[in-house]
Amino acid sequence: MNWFRIRELVRKEFIQLLRDKRNRLVLFVAPLIQMLVFGYVVNYDIRYIRVAVVDYSHTQESRKLADAFEGSRVFSITHTLTDERILEDLLLRGQVDMGIKIAPDFAAVIRQGETAAIQIIADGSMSNMAALRMAYTVSVLEKFNRETLRELYPQPMRYGRIDARVRTWYNPNIESQYFFVPGIVAFVIMLISLLLTSIAIIREKEAGTMEQLIVTPMKSYEFILGKTIPYIIISLLQLTVVIIIAITWFQIPLVGSIPLLFFAACLFLLSTLGIGLFISTISTTQQQAMMTTFFFILPFFMLSGFVFPITNMPVIVQWLTYLNPLRYFLVILRGIFLKGVGLNVLWPQYLFLAILGMIVFSGAIARFKKRLD
Image (cartoon, rainbow, N blue to C red; front, side, top):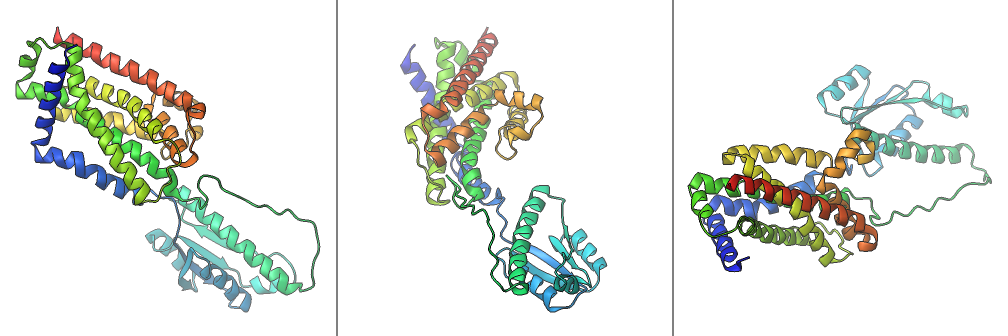
């Protein structure tokens, strides 16, 4: 192996990348924008629920129920209606997230010590948001029931009960950003490394310099190393930047080992760079390479557990996720960021990443050798 030839090819690759202003934007500006945008947009925390109330009771009890929702930290009564048909129109137009319909006999039933029913109508077009809204609604109703019970029966009532003292480890406030931001770190690195590597060889072909490189004394593996080392360096620099943003801007704790994190990133890059090289060998134009890259990115994203739990997927699809390197890298990132675990816990993910990376990268090299013959 001649490291002088590899060094000169790496230098040429950096010069070719950085002399184009568009490439500079992709390399340095795009990851920052993606990190900031995704970090704020990809969020399941509910901080504002618009509620319309249809009050047919018009009593002190119904007003207290409305005040219980208005006094919570997430609900806001934006419409007080007298006709439930207006409520349906508001839900159709997306002007409210939820409707509450209070029956005329609501107060009378409560005063008799019986259970009064109210109708809760939620917009279920986004099922995950609807489930969270209903959970918040149940908590408000439970608090209202306890306060109403104390007013109706002021005498102390002694009975055995369960005192649940709940503690959420690793994410005490259950913030979505703690879950999503480490995943965004992995997604940004995957996107850039796949996209740039997939056009690396195509760019030589379109520029007419591929034939010149083939006839040089450079071996095929030296050519692959010279082509991939710049993107490894760039990807690791981008990883450093997005980790700094995650820690300083989004206040995500990094309690684990930073060297272990970068070691996992190198194993992950084996797979992404190998796939990018494979795409580069089967494509004839840069446009075709980019389209093929996005064909790989979407399944990787969907089958990684980034948004959708893998355990909720069909069994056949769950088996397919074992071929996805992003799945293992996400587990490592969240384990190191939030839990501070090491190789004693994460060794299966490191092992699978190493196996996948070696298979994919060696396959890409074998494919490239055939194209040199």
